[in-house]
Length: 519
Image 1 (cartoon, rainbow, N blue to C red):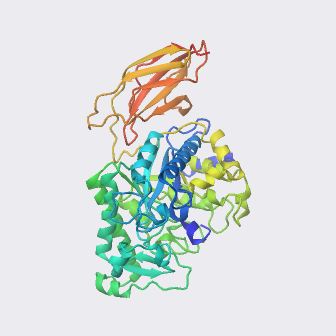
Image 2: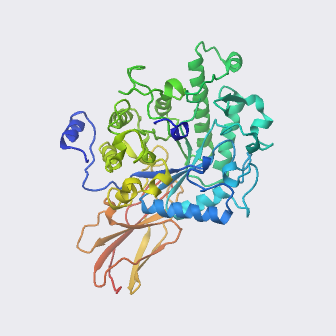
Image 3: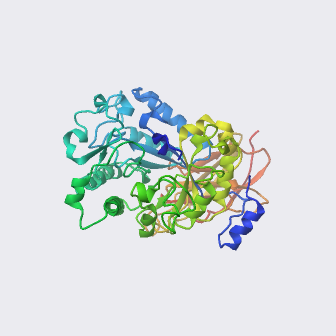
């Protein structure tokens, strides 16, 4: 994230809606919250930004801290987490070819005490909380600094020193080496094969950001592997493209349901660099300076979602949130577009707009005005938990007060599961107990990963498109649910739907009518 570089990474007025209408954009109705919206937080492990709170904690405390994060983010309306599992060619998981992370245990290569597998634990707990788990990798960063005591003898920089470039006090995998691309891909596949993750996620670090008094010394690699390129810039961009395509193809061949998403720096290119770029004046751009053609990856269909880090305010003069948002909606090429929200800046950035308590809500409302935007990811979890300018309270009580299902990806799976059968209800003083029969596998073999329980006043229409009617989602595999939030003497209708792992939803079950007996 750009935070590590120490670089600055009102409701919509009627006139703006008219502008969207006459420029051909689909505008969502605002009076009903979206039923489908990706809502996630980044959980950064490097430097113990989010979790664990400090290195070397006991396994029990680590687990308690992670559960607390999930509990709080679930209350915030989140339906996914993006967790950094490989910060510096070291691992937050047991089944790894790389050593245990320094940020986990305080000594790179030392296992947690008592022993456990953090990734296995996190995936299970995240799903138990009804949320997706996206495994976040830093593909090229090999060391966070050059403190040799932090680097174990089994670290890849020790065994394969010829694979690395040194820049700005860090060691980086050399993207121009075919062996490096093969190795990184296999590291990712270790996780995909061994853990039930929902997605693989990269952030914005490809070739390094400029800003330090250093030179990237890859001339010898260019001489050996230039493959006819006359421009080193084009060659570097090609190297990154090769890795993205290799990871994409490997995921499709290994577990085609696992998503692939990337969160690039928010500016692909400025219009001054390219007439197809955004109306911005960013000091660096992803395409030109990081050699990361995120727009091209979308056009080629290599990634399933993009989450540009638009860590700027709606009042920023050089890199304006509203202008960047508009640009990305025109360049997402039918894939999912989630906006990276810079909540870490609230109340403490040089840009005074971030001292306006309504800034984040304003940005979310702008997002929702575009049908091309399917949600947001917040950097980072700690920023929401700290609740600066009451942003957390605002989400809970306002824009995220109703639950949302994760948007579907029809290019990966568009077949819904079968309908849960024989819904039954019994009422007593503890609440209303529902039970149903799990559906048979659908034509693609998928069954229900979870269930959605809807409740309606008995005289109301059964409307499963309004998320305010969702009572709960049931992720634990059980075909039962007890609704304790009912009133004595009140009559209700219930229906249940089945949802598969890519969030296709069945048609509703048979409705049941029941009267609450709870005191």
